[in-house]
Length: 166
Image 1 (cartoon, rainbow, N blue to C red):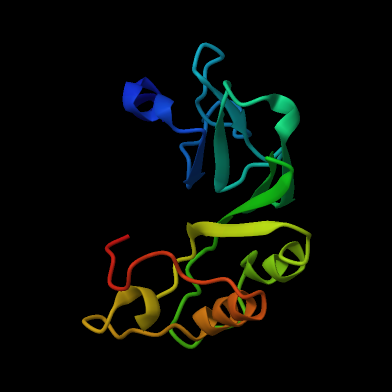
Image 2: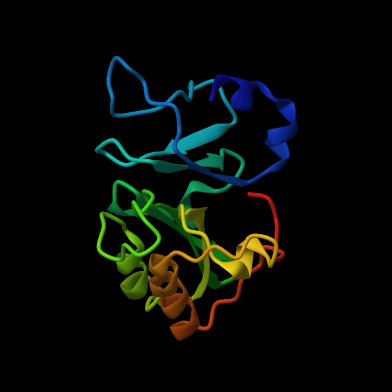
């Protein structure tokens, strides 16, 4: 986190979504983000695997964090009178290609996507599927189908180019 926050190139960004942030070994309930930085840290109360950095130049009255689980945090933004939701997800690897029942916040997404407004879903899902792996890596995790079903139901589309290295 320290090298990221020290990099002046990040100051142009309004919101940075992070998965698996460094955890402070002394408190276990936060990550590194000194007050002197240009960002507010949006981190769950209990140790989580996702967080946001929100640039301090954004009016604090235009955004609100929500924590559905330690591994799924959302930001609700008001932009030109429109609500925009950014959902940041960290999902543990399912254990095997055929596993569908494992500890993951992915099912929580379905109810979050019911909220009025536009939605962006991002994160580290730890799932392989040809839609994002591309044809050169045709690995399919059964658990990816649950995510795809939720995204299809809410008419979201993949913005990541197929075959992108993530």
